[in-house]
Amino acid sequence: MSQSRQTSGLTTSTSHYTSSRSLNSPSIKALQLEYAKLQKEPVEGFTVKLDDDSNLYKWHVGIFGPPDTLYEGGYFKADMEFPTTYPFAPPKVRFLTKMWHPNIYENGEVCISILHPPTEDPQSGEHPSERWNPTQNVRTILMSIISLLNEPNCSSPANVDASVMYRKYKENKDNEYETIIKRQVNESRLIAEQEGITIPKTLDDYVAPSRAGALGLNNGKNGKKSAYNTLSHEDDVDLGIDDDDDQVADMADDDDGSYDESD
Figure 1 (cartoon, rainbow, N blue to C red):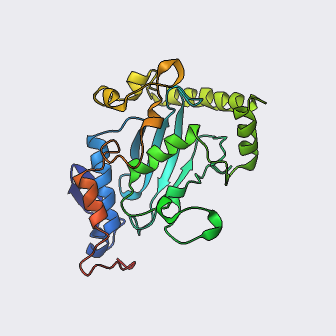
Figure 2 (spheres, helix red, strand yellow):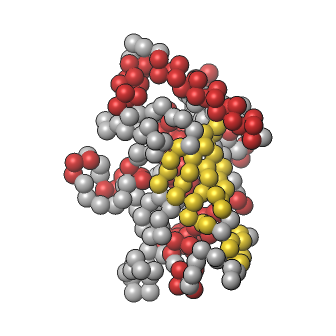
């Protein structure tokens, strides 16, 4: 018999969770905290909702294209699927909207260091600190993806053709990359209209007024610096990492200081 659990304003069915042990697992606790917080305090640049109210492990994400970038005015949909070992292992993020980008596979899956498991992989060229760790969260993931949109990492591309085209675009040798992105942005706008989604049209719309002054928006196109460039993982305040998120990180230290995947 399905029951219901109320946590921080979030009601979730427990029909998927067959034991009190699973209900008390670090992954459920972490996801309940993060989802409730993002509903209470939305962050500019993206929206999140559950794929199914009875399943906390799959979220639908809507990402708005940052102002003063090729993606400005776009609305890009993605799925975020969490493992039962979250926050000790990263989720997978896959765009449902067609995306032509050096760091996005043709199937829409995002390839970015923060989503790679915290294991040693000398061949990847990634420093262990760049990979996933339990102090990361949905906000830091999505902020990283927003930054990635306009600042691709072409050193290890997921889409080689897109990477080559992007390099030519940056070297002012070919505008095909820009043409494709603008077409995809226009297509995404039609989807937003069909779903009744309001896309931020100005920098003021995109960035919360209370944060705009603190971000020091300048030096970008038309004298403004894009919001995606002002956000870094080194600034916990801007990323919204506070006591609630610290609780998620603290879950890494279980009663005996170890984690059992059977939890």
